[in-house]
Image (tube, rainbow, N blue to C red; front, side, top):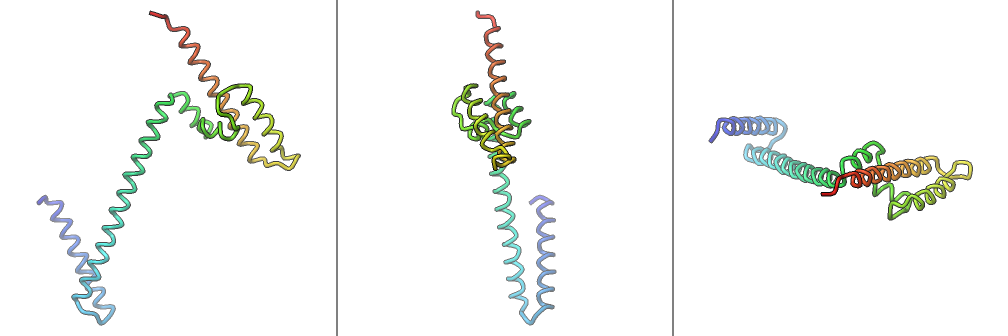
Length: 157
């Protein structure tokens, strides 16, 4: 057994002894019951600690999977998502477009912008979301156009 574990066991034993003494001072319960109570408290802490560690591992795995997915989408697209605060999918949902067609994007943008205008009783918050979604989709169109130009400039072998 390594020295670290021996120290940990000593700390736990000391903790249990202190809790036992405190419980004995508080009431008229026996030492055996106090030890059981202390053991229940320690087990509860261990269970919560394990559950927290498991949740943390799951969160790290989900974060890693999301980072991998963003990496597959392309570095420029991921950077644009970080700058605008909207992912490509969110922007498409806001403007209700399925494909990245400039005409459809512009048509839906103009309609939603007018509908959410504050002067006609709309919401400034929603209007700003529409603008951010339009900006994000315009950036994605620019990135795709740039990638297409780069593909065309590559020499064919």
